[in-house]
Image 1 (cartoon, rainbow, N blue to C red):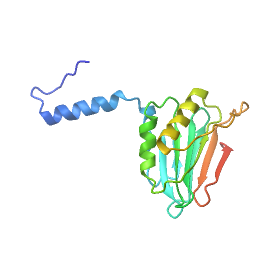
Image 2 (image 1 turned 120 degrees about the vertical axis):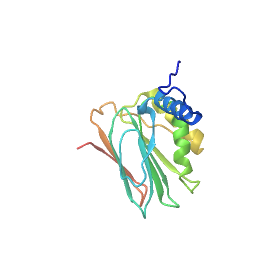
Image 3 (image 1 turned 180 degrees about the vertical axis):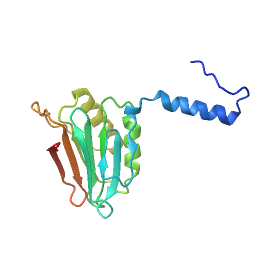
Image 4 (image 1 turned 30 degrees about the horizontal axis):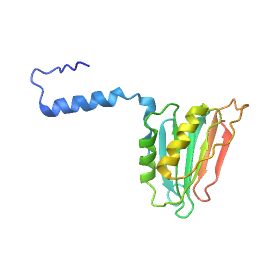
Length: 166
């Protein structure tokens, strides 16, 4: 790749900034799992972490071929909800970032994937197992799932509610 700078005499700082920007732009935006603090409604490619005393409910919407990942700690009543987009090559890095938010070592994790590709589901489950040290068993997919689904995580009791998107 050839990099051309607009200024005649680029400073080292400007060159570092340009290289960092080019590196950031080389990653497809759809793969970035962004942390959205204090956000109860999580969009595609985002995750949020909260506690029952701060924000007792987290919600994501439009889950069909993506994966919603609900993580809950019963002893500390803290949790995270992530909306993972298909083909995320940085899934392990993203899960380590999510894991770092938790003070607890005990987790309940649910993978919600109404029609996600089997390979994607298995890779996500393997990444969760590697980062959290929890064996993940995947349930059957719903072959009749045709709607988009909303996923709600209640941090008061760890319940996960999956409903058709309204």
